[in-house]
Length: 150
Image 1: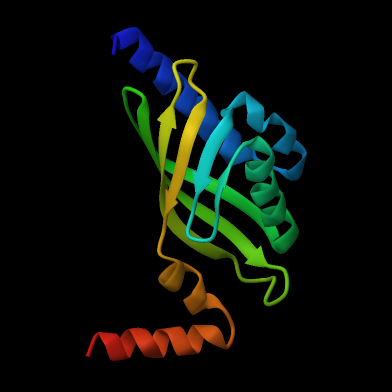
Image 2 (image 1 turned 135 degrees about the vertical axis):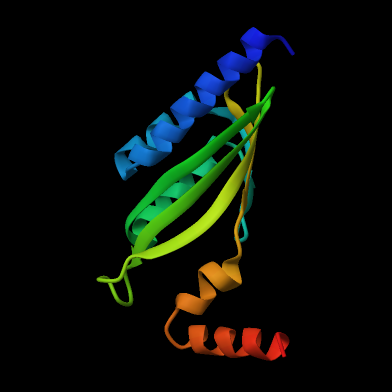
């Protein structure tokens, strides 16, 4: 891959990171500016393909959570591959809406020649970062972790 293509991909990833930092429900129609039409998306709960399905996942996020937002802390780009390190900050709508929750994770991205994402896979520990923070279930998950570590 040429240096120019790599720098183009770096610019595309920087634009995507900025988009995520400012993402709101009104921006979901703009996902096609950053994702290829047949892009794949996978996280601990979902595995989908195509812009409408990806848009639905992000739409559900805004419905289910209070003030969700991404803070991208690192960006690594090597040719058509990129990795974003991020914090996902939100409050639960159904539980305590005062306490901000933080999930730390990363996204492995594969980019097309035009800089659009063709494959997006999120990596984060659902047990530690989410389940342990839920009322009721959290106590059980923490107990299981302690038992597993004995």
